[in-house]
Amino acid sequence: MIFASRGKVLKRQRETKVDQRDEFTRWMDVLLQRAEEAGVEGEVPVAAVILDGQGRAIGHGRNRRQNQRDPLGHAELVALRQASIVQNDWRFNDCTLIVTLEPCPMCAGALVQARMGKVVFAATDPKRGGLGGSLDLSTHASAHHHMKVIHGIRETESREKLERWFKQRRRANR
Ligand SMILES: [Zn+2]
Image 1 (cartoon, rainbow, N blue to C red):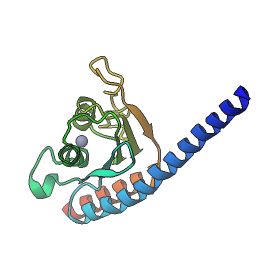
Image 2 (image 1 turned 90 degrees about the vertical axis):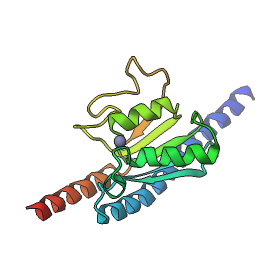
Image 3 (image 1 turned 60 degrees about the horizontal axis):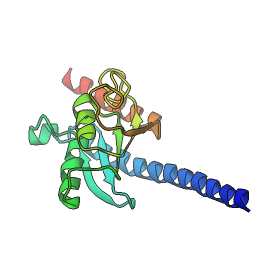
C-alpha cells in the first residue's frame, strides 16, 4: 500500500510538471505576440510576464527603452516593478518570470535581488545573456539566492523573430 500511494504521488508530480510546461508554452505564445507588437513600435521585440504561486499574472512588461528613453526599460524590469506593486512585496520566492529572450546581466541581477523562484526563457543570448548564454549570474558566487532556470520553450520562434527584427532595422538604417 505504501508503494502504491508513493507511485500515485510520483505520477501526480510528473503530471504537474507536464501541466506546468504546457502553461509556460501557452504563456510564451502570448508573449511572442506582445513582443511582435513591441517590435512594430520600434522596440527590441521582447516581452515578459510574472506569475504568482497560484499561476496568476501579476506583472506584464515589454521593452520600452526607446519610447520612454529609459535605459532600465527592459521587459523584465517593467514586469518586476508592476508585480511588486500588485503583491506589495519585493520578494518573489513563489513566483515565476517568463520572458521571450534570456535576461541580460542587468535583469538577471535584478531577478536574483528579487529572489525570483523560477525564470523561464525562450531564446538564449550567447552575446549578452546573463543566465548562462554569456555569463551565469544564477550560479555566480555573488548569487545569494538560487533561482531555477528553464529555457528552450519556443526558442526557435523567438530567435527568428529577433533576427527578423534586427535585419529589418539594419535595412531601414542603410
Ligand atoms: Zn535586461
